[in-house]
Length: 143
Image (cartoon, rainbow, N blue to C red):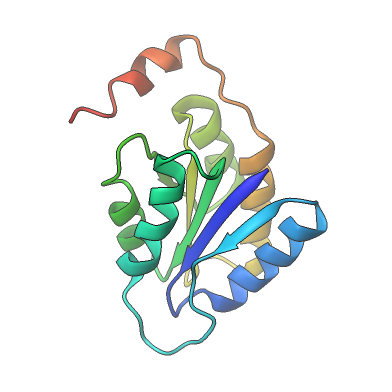
């Protein structure tokens, strides 16, 4: 699987943990995030991930910032990108099952690295249920 990851200064440790796991599982990872805690602007990294998802370069995206909100808002501006802000693995599962989310947004300041890793594992191994949910997903991209 091909996965793009992007983060701001709140998430470099989370990113390193997640990337190490993904690569150990044989996934191809494109790293757009910062590797330091020096202040940066989350949209700069989020948009790079979103463009890869939007253009079909990757299968999924992972974005990380302090609250997870700002970077999720940024990536959701892209056509056919459905980023879900997740704070527990059950939400990550529902984001895939019901919303066909293709980007997971992680709030680094409100989850542990272990929680984040569990959410990513769940997100990547959960299938979209389709059915009644497809009709709703089709209505998300209004523009």
